Length: 331
Image (cartoon, rainbow, N blue to C red; front, side, top):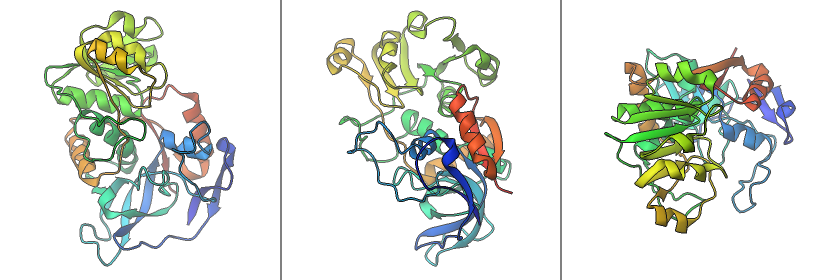
C-alpha cells in the first residue's frame, strides 16, 4: 500500500510518500481501507518531533512512523473477536489517541481498535466524515461530556463541562476545526453564541448560526464581550487569560491548548479554568455523526489534497486561518 512516513523530524519536506506493507489487525482491531484522512495539530507536532514539550510529557516515537489519527473508510477485515463491525461497513474514527499520538491514518490501509470507530452515516461523504473525529470529539468532551476519567497531564483539577442551556458561550478561534464545531454544539444545547475570528470568516460563521461576531483584527474581544458564562478558547496558549474579564462570576474558561494562569486570580474572580485531553471514543463519535447526518451540525472542509501531496496539506496548515479542516484523500 501507499503511505506517508517520517524517517526524521522536521518541516513538511520530511513527509515521504512510500510503499509499505498492509498492516494486520490484532485482537480487538479492524482493518480499514482508508478513503480519507483528516489533519490535526498533533500531526505537525509529531512531524516536528514536538520541540519545546518537556521530556516528561513527550511520548516516544519509533521512526519511521506513519502519522495521522482521523480516518473514514471501509472495513476490509476484522479480528476474530470483533462483533461490532463487519467487512463492507463504512466507518470513521479517531485512532488510538492520545497514545501514541499517531494512528497510521496517512495510508491506504490502517488498523484501528474497534472501540475507536463509529459507523459513517450514509448521507455523509468520506471527506467530511474524516474531518470530524478529533475536532468534533474535542468540542464534545470540553462542552458536552468528557466521557473518561483520565486527568489532564497539565493540571490536577478534573474538567467538567458547564451547563449550556440559556448560557452565553464565546468561542475563540471559531473558524477552525474545533471552533466551528464547538460553536454549533453550544447553539444545539441552547446557548447564545459569540464567535471570535478574523473578518474573512464572518459570513461562514454567521451561516453556522453565530449570534454575535467579533473580528479580532478590528477590536479586542476582551474589550467588548461581557457577562459571558463559558469561553472555549480553541487557540489557547499563553494569551488565554486575556478572556478572564469577559466572564461573569461563576463562569468557566476552557483553553484547548494549555494556558498560563494564576490560580489565586481565578479564585478571586470566581472563574473556573480547566481543560482536558481529547481521547478516542467511538460511542461519542456516533452521537456526533448522528448530528451531522440530521443537519444539526455541519462539518466544514478548508481544503482537500491527495495523499501523495501531504506536504502541500501541511504547508496549507502552516499558513493558518483555516476555515474548517484539511483532508487527505486516497487514490
